Length: 114
Image 1 (cartoon, one colour):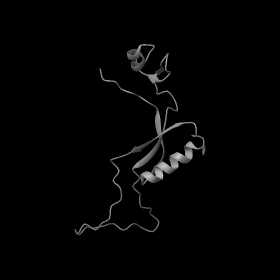
Image 2: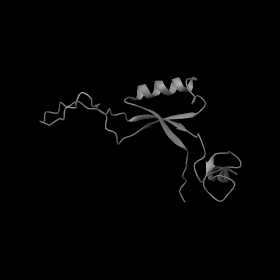
Image 3: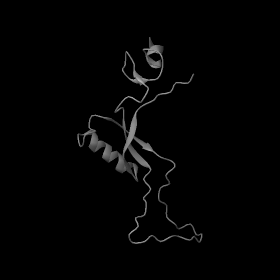
Image 4: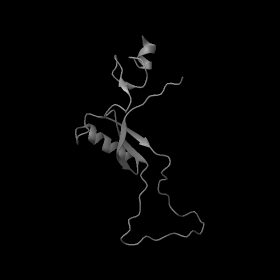
């Protein structure tokens, strides 16, 4: 059976560049906001294509948005908040208190270690 780690997580904010995401995560970690004591990770969503210049040399039809219509901006970098709660159906390990799914009192890592 393969080891699967399940964690509770949700995106806090998305950014267009990695630098912006790192600066925001550092600001949160230094005490700005209610997530200062949370564990943060930066994830890259490869399904969101970053903005690229149209200078490919091919003729393309481009829809010009109305003045009232906002153009969606591609933001593939997300600051994620982890371990805010136990995932539904999980229970805490008796030794390390990390959530896991199973019929045992110890998670697979603690069971293998001891």
